[in-house]
Length: 101
Image (tube, rainbow, N blue to C red; front, side, top):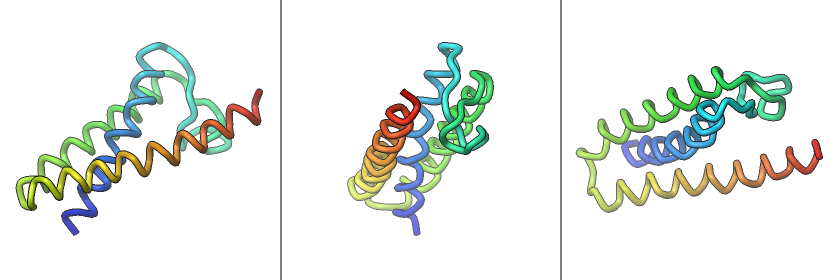
């Protein structure tokens, strides 16, 4: 279970980056709260809060679970989570941008 939580930590940390970046630049960006979810754009404030929530959650999970496992395997689990969500989101948002022109 610890490795799954570290996988989740990596995914949360990766997902926080685009939302924080969009929010801090004052740009709208898709969130799960937009209509339609994950395709419509949310305002910058929502993105900043969502990105902060993801980042704080990822850091908290990593800090809580990483000391309890073999560090190398734990970091690998977090890296796999990071890569998995990053690849999926790159594919998803590439398709959304292509659809919206």
